[in-house]
Amino acid sequence: AKMSTMDARAVLESELNKNLTAVGATKSTMTWKPTAGTADADGRALDGPVELTINTKLPDKELRKQVVDPIKPYMEKAKVFSLVMNDSASHANWTYNVQPATSSPDSETGAQ
Image 1 (cartoon, rainbow, N blue to C red):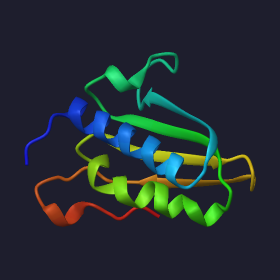
Image 2: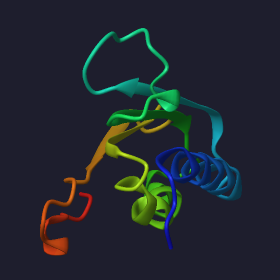
Image 3: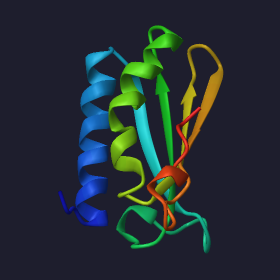
Image 4: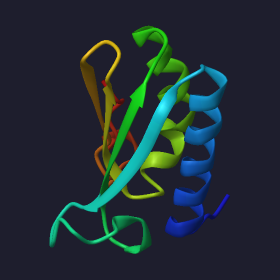
């Protein structure tokens, strides 16, 4: 279905909040930054590509998969080509990257 960038970001943020709550994460914050331009700008409202950083405290670092995996289908539509999750409890961080599709739908890579 057709979805605007802003609609995809709203769904992505809502789902992330729901998933973080479901796994018992605490002290969760999200920061949206434009991939180019000033670091002070709130990237959530921009139409261009953004980076999303999630700072949280997970009860178990393996729960990150339950938080991020369900939102991966929205990342490209939301123009979130880089998502970083920082877990203060385990002192770990994970980066998920999506490459924007070009002419072939096979050009998207899975998040690592």
